[in-house]
Image (cartoon, rainbow, N blue to C red; front, side):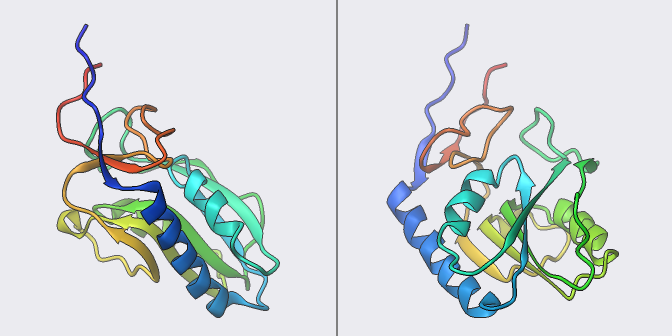
Length: 179
């Protein structure tokens, strides 16, 4: 049995807390008095979303959507599946999408196009991390926590094949993971 590599800390829990507070402050300035729908992309962004919304001091609704483009791989397959759609109408609503990582941009472009067809009043994106070196499709990020290198990251809700999601820090995996 091959031992799994130890993730190396890229951003500590303390650095993440500072970034989440900074993002919450900017989001509050833009959404105060607007009662937005916060759409959290499952599964990776649920920890970030939970921490973020606890710092937002205005009425909001939280909705979850689930997409898949990775499966068990460390690279996106390029095929995007909508596993769980929205359960509420967003037509005419202020909408903020919360994502864990913007990578190639293909998944978010798919999602944002899907949401635009539902005619929200506004549609913005808050991303915990951005990996611009891998971008294939342009994506406008309205609120960004961190820019990350072209390495596979895990922790703080972000996983690889359901592993490492529980880590309190954002870490990098530099070696191949065993099955």
